[in-house]
Image: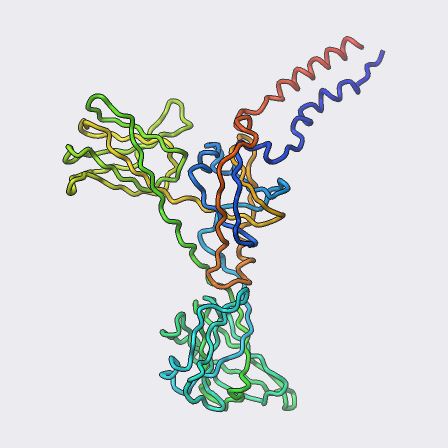
Length: 441
């Protein structure tokens, strides 16, 4: 009798059914509610020791995600250290300037910010400006931010008279210090003559600047102060460095010793990116040479690597020594002294917390999930998304911070346990199915 192979189907599909879609919260050990006080398109998130402690050490922080109210993951990744250069294009009217550059400081007023959500056009003529010629020979335009221009294009109205000019362009970052960018550029508009021609582009050198001052070197100014011309600035933005997070510190105490000792061990609350430390010796010790090591949490047997060597000497009523080094993730530290110490030294470690950013996709409240042996975060184009958001915002804009709530349990310790070995079960299932098939035949 021919066996019914449909009976074998559940056995073959068992591993696939076990790996079916699982809610995101069911794949992570812990959950943190995120509080967003201001409505925004993106939020920054400063990692706390509790978040570091919730992550599985071997995951290198990639087992941390953010989900919305529907439990769907949102784009989430490390905050770029600097903004990226983005295409820049802005049309602005030129501002008339006095005949003499010495009068510029009285003719210009600078507001603190531009209009919300608009590029920062913040340079305005002052009400008490000196007399400006009816047809000014000097003009100013504010790009609103640091940019590298490829060219400046003059915009001509149909009512503008024909002109042919030689222009010079100067640039500045602060309206105080100016440098020559273009010594002479020929521009013309002869649209009223037979076979009209226009050449309105001024090539630029791509040097970083915010303010651009155009000066007519030769030719009759065609525009009046009451009907200023417009220009289009075309280039790229200048990447802006993101200010570094302030250091956070924690004082650690070693286990007390009953007798003089030379080796002391300290445990941090999580795998923290330590980058500096300070050792304070007992008051009875005048000086000591100390060596600080960190333990590789994944090596068998345990291996210690030297992190820093510190020479501590007496300073007033305390004896201390400091050391700085490239950030190193550490959860255990060992201090060894060349001489025996009557008491353990006090160890103060400092680290700069990681800052991540997530996009506000879907409704809140948002939650951070952390701690998984298998789940990993995708590689989202966070830098490109932030660049897109910055185009419509004032210079230096950064997403607001979201506050991290207390830790709560999601899937619990089960998310950190090794996955069930389905291959062995599948192998046995195939062997049993083969034996049944042979017997049936």
